Image (tube, rainbow, N blue to C red):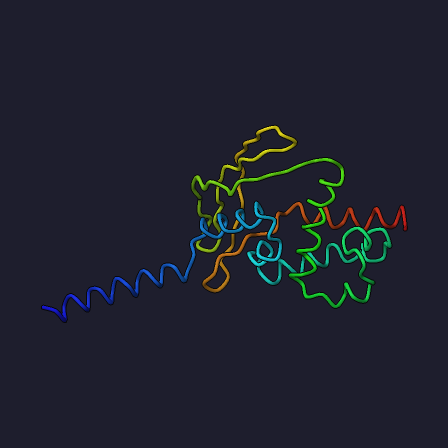
Length: 181
């Protein structure tokens, strides 16, 4: 009887730890949103897949040609120093810049971790996670519902880069052609 109970206990512990080792799509979006709310940019960026992190970096790389970009996004670093940054550190600096930039313009943002409302699957490797985001912008309470798409690569879920990013990256390149720094 004791061996049976130990076997059941071992099974419960094993399955619980396996469940913890493989976060769900919803948990990944929640953890990503919590990192963003805490402005923990390196952690937030780690929820993207390596190819997507590289895609974000490559989208912003043309801005390295702009001296004002380098000074704004990477204060005190030369173009050579910036190119040596690993992809996560590079993208974390870019994400952090947007919040620093808003604060420098007098815009205050305080976001709560997201509340996951549910998700819809699209095949076996894509889920669209619906969440509510609450916070305060310039002392005004805000609340909105949004969707984040996550993709399963191997056995892990990753936050997807929105399709609009490709258009954004192209517009960066186009702007630089028209207004070099």
